[in-house]
Image 1 (cartoon, one colour):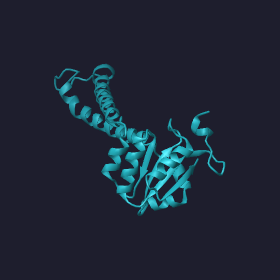
Image 2 (image 1 turned 90 degrees about the horizontal axis):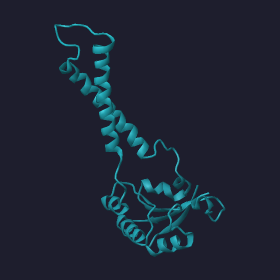
Image 3 (image 1 turned 120 degrees about the vertical axis):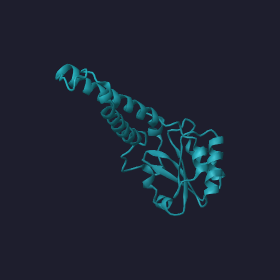
Image 4 (image 1 turned 180 degrees about the vertical axis):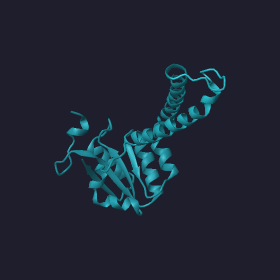
Length: 187
């Protein structure tokens, strides 16, 4: 059993983390930097619009999607080329206009198309997987005030899975940032 699974909220439910509420983007960015400096690493922020400073302060890991797209494109190109080679050279060779069976120049347009198709599908699947989608539910939806994240409030979540997470210490650290409210996020 993980440490996060053993933590309980005040109501006795499994604890996902503690979430602080802020009124301005500047307060959120300041709090995020202070909490990060305190050594907490499993953080997330929720804002009604993208904020560049929040993304920089969260310091997310590099995306694996470009590598997935590259691999998908290479596989697509090889699959397109291999399919044409198999059909024209191995399975059903036809002499057309005196060309050799392996007429690679004629293989270029379909190979390009399969490369683009596989790369595009890999981008979609890789993006969905990297973002953990589709995800119709997240524990932060259990906090009634979280609905304001799409309007005019800013939230900072410290997840219970953080190695340094201790409910009392995290609550004190979030309170020291000037949070307007601190909410327990139950699983």
